[in-house]
Length: 331
Ligand SMILES: Nc1ncnc2c1ncn2[C@@H]1O[C@H](COP(=O)(O)OP(=O)(O)OP(=O)(O)O)[C@@H](O)[C@H]1O
Image (tube, rainbow, N blue to C red; front, top):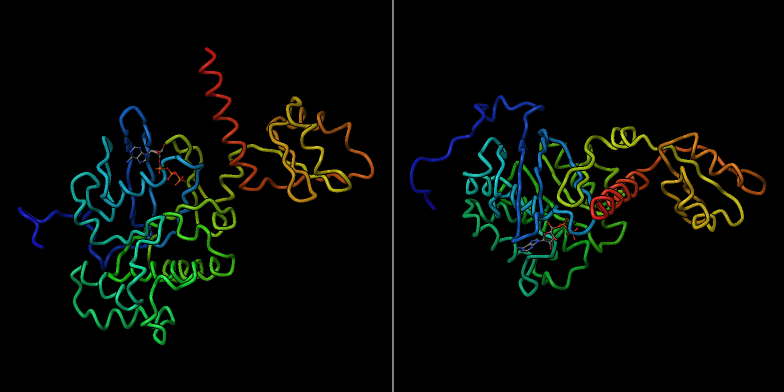
């Protein structure tokens, strides 16, 4: 498929040989996308360097899929600028698609084709050379050579996702955009999938992966958290936790988990949530928080200060957003 007119040039001058670890594989700013009256993505910007795994988090409807689709060139941003793999994100969608692997939220392969047929079909769609060789390498990589004739629809959820990953990487992309790749997959299969992601990143693949799982967020080199189309937090997990300014105490002992309701709404307590039999209580005003929990700091409960988790921070971010929204509506 020849593109009409002159071939797009990478905006950055770097050639493959001199592209180092700090190359900005994704470098976009001010991306906006609306669907009618709904402003789904607002002034989105992100830089992800080569070989990094960036987790993309946020509540349902936050704008993650829309952003991934814009970065892949499937959806044209209404405004914004920047590059993906050095190509202009607004103008060079064809070049970007050739070099990026995209795994959609739903299993998008053919369930009534065999594993091998799915991979061969994908190789044809990408007009790849050495198809047989590439498909064989993918089958070997998956450990599925013996089961090459098995229908994809008969695979377990975890294996389906690994097959989808093999299909998404068959054309040798430099960047992977993964949209909730392990949703509904059991913990062991998720772990295997993540080991593969880390293996790919160690070999120079850059990955932007959306997820709702906190353990997966913690397995990323860095994260971006968005809600209502806006980026609310960005950095490594430690940086995001530090920037939150949250102070967290946890209480253990009989009935600790049941204190959550009592403490919610008390001045100084911005979040109170049970985790099993343990209670997490967080706030940003240490003095007010300590005053709020003081009446309960007695036997048989054992209290200690703990580092906030990413989940504590994300819950906090959502509360802040809802409070700001309520205030704006009331004004
Ligand atoms: N093609 C479309 N037409 C109209 N509205 C859309 C379209 N695609 C997405 N939206 C809306 O844009 C908002 C953002 O959706 P998006 O799928 O990007 O969120 P998300 O963060 O990926 O959510 P989830 O975690 O549930 O997958 C939602 O309100 C969604 O309903």
